[in-house]
Image 1: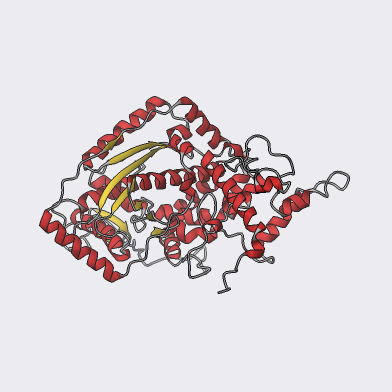
Image 2: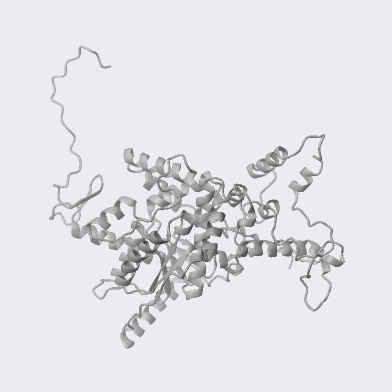
Length: 508
């Protein structure tokens, strides 16, 4: 043990740390210009080769994007998505060593209306991004978030998934693309520009009321992320893109993994953080930047002058404890400062996650969450944490014995059935025929277009239930969500009525 009067005769030596005066670990000749990690020092040229190779290796290893496909790049203006745009731009240049073989496009979602930015600030941001997009020569689309209020309900219907193609099919597609490209030559890309349509004040107010209906910042961020993803998928479908490329980096995915677990999205982690996400069927989401840390991206953008535009969000200038996402981000970044392997350890854990396949076939479209489109995680056994939480919630909402408490558990234990009443207004059937449900004394099935919170929760996963629970009223939700919810409820009621005549899955 150390003593107070102990003498130290040996001279203390200072441990050598990484220094920029060292040589590059790759070429062993040029002086190091950047230190990624302890012991990983690169010169300017080797760091650029390392960065480019990492991006193309990620695409080549997974082989999700086939030659000749149209890929939509979701660019938010941040460092990660702008760095992804630069990688695609360099991969399609004439002097590229291994050229990329897909046709890219750019989409930007303007969220200024949800954040509360003025029209002048939004126009200034759009002008800066237009200059960046025009320099690439790619077609780009600028879509305001207010358009999410006018989306069709088909966005929430998973389109038929594309058939899984083998590795031999990928090689055959590459050979066919190379031969056709060498014969006809690369066609010149015509840049198509879609300017931001004029947003009405009424739509902007409706969007602000929708985001503001969530009581907590955690629910607002989760709701905004869901609406943004719906609008991105709709834009990709209408413009003919089969792949949607996102700019989530390693640091962002590590924060997302921990925050998703805190929000009850443990069953959806493989789809939320994996390289490819096929929950929408015909439109596959890919994350090619998931191997890069935020530090690597910041160094690359600074050294090679990659332009980016800062756009304030909901969590801008907020405290660490304002939301679960913000608290998790602060925790991970501060821990990464003292322990540099924190982000990589969390990220490697996410790589091992696989989506749970309950059967060999794809899940039924009616077994998907209404908002996030993932498989429902509420069909669990009675002896589970979810059922215990549900029973506890029902008991807490039960009224006292002196009141009408006998009716409350019955309403909470099962979906609320429509009250028996005569159909008001027009019936859902055409040709003047009577509605089947109305004839049986159950009221018209077209009534009660806006489902109540209790009815809507039966169509959601556990995490989305918490988001809807934090909303003051579900009537603020966009019409396409309410219409799809009503459609699913009608189908569920119809299925119960004819359940005696249906064959089960295990019956041949």
